[in-house]
Length: 264
Image 1 (cartoon, rainbow, N blue to C red):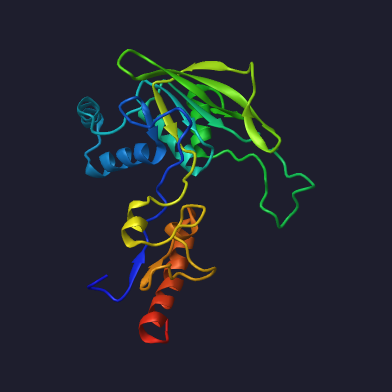
Image 2: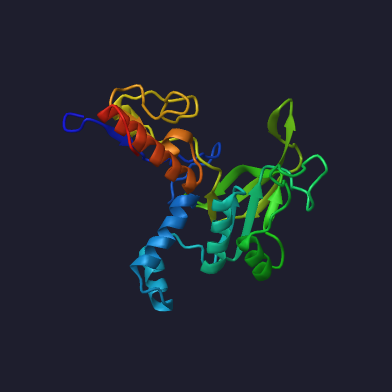
């Protein structure tokens, strides 16, 4: 802040939501989905990516491989779908995707008319590819991971899953519904819970109850003079179009702060 009149914090909302009792340490076979996907993308960009180079990368730990493993993915969004498709391409032994919410209807209900967003079952490319390779849709609805079982080296070997149901407004495990699945790779794609705190802490800005950088409604100035924020760090995890829109609006507000007016 000694060198600049204004600073804009646009560091995203990368604080991934975990699962109770399951620590995503990597070397135990549990990873956050973005870390898994990023490792594959980096390996592809570093190329070449032929059969020989893949074998070499797997041998040297060059990327997180799902080859030959029983994979379980927790989370039903776009990231979870990308994990399914990537694991299929890796050559996973099996792919199972757990979603805590009930399976949506195949057709729009009368209670969900246009112009509301259609709340219907959607089958994306990852689901289709997994169904083609393994013979069935990989998704299991109203289900989550209850616990993990590990080998002597501390690596995940299987998980216990359980049905879930809402009771008094809270999601609870359904007793007696437990099943055990083989699982050497567990990918958590359960969304994000705001921004990583080291940047806000260093700048001394206040956070909202959603762990995003706090501003007044429809504005981008933080609690610290000269510090602004935009994008996911401001509004929480969202789409890139919102990042573009907020970046433009924030630039206008910074321009007004510096110049007293803005032509942006």
